[in-house]
Length: 192
Picture (spheres, rainbow, N blue to C red):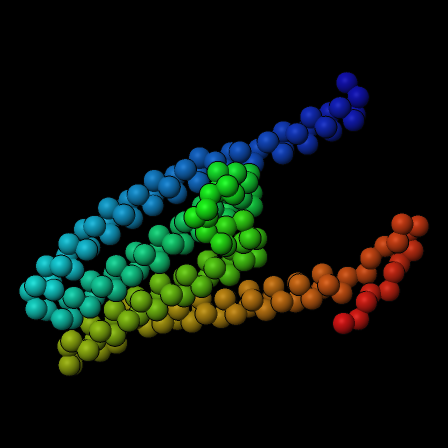
C-alpha cells in the first residue's frame, strides 16, 4: 500500500471520527428533557407559594425557574452550535421557516462568548437568591459560601471580558494578516 493511500485512509478516519460526538449531543437532548421535568416541579412549587402568600419564597422559586430557563437555553445553544461546528450541518433546520436566526452563524468563538454570558447570568441569579435570603433574616451574616459565589461570579465576568478581548485581537490579526502572492512573495497588508 502506498504512503499516499495510507495517509488518505488515516485522514478519512480522522474526518469521520467527528461522528463520535453525536451521542454526546443526543445525551444533551435527554438532559434538556430532564430540565423540563425539573421546571415542572419548580413551577408547581411557585404556584403553591403564590397562593400561600409567602413573597420571599415566591421570589426565590421564580428565580429558580429563570435559572432553569437560562440553563435550557445554554444547553440548546451548545447542542446546535456544537453539532454544526464540529459534526455536520443540520439540513432540516435550513429549510424550516421557524429556524432560529443565530443557528448556523455561531462559530466556536461565539459559542465561548454565549457560554460565559450564560454562566454569568446564572451566577447572578444564584447571588440574587443569596441576597434575598440575607434580607429575610435581619441578623444574618454573609457566610463563606456567599463570598465564594461572589468570587466565582467575578471570575466568570473577568473571563468573559478576556474572551471578548481575545476575540477582538484575533479578528484584528486576521484582518491585518500578510497574504502570500501566487509566486510566493509577500503582499503588503492593506491598512484600514
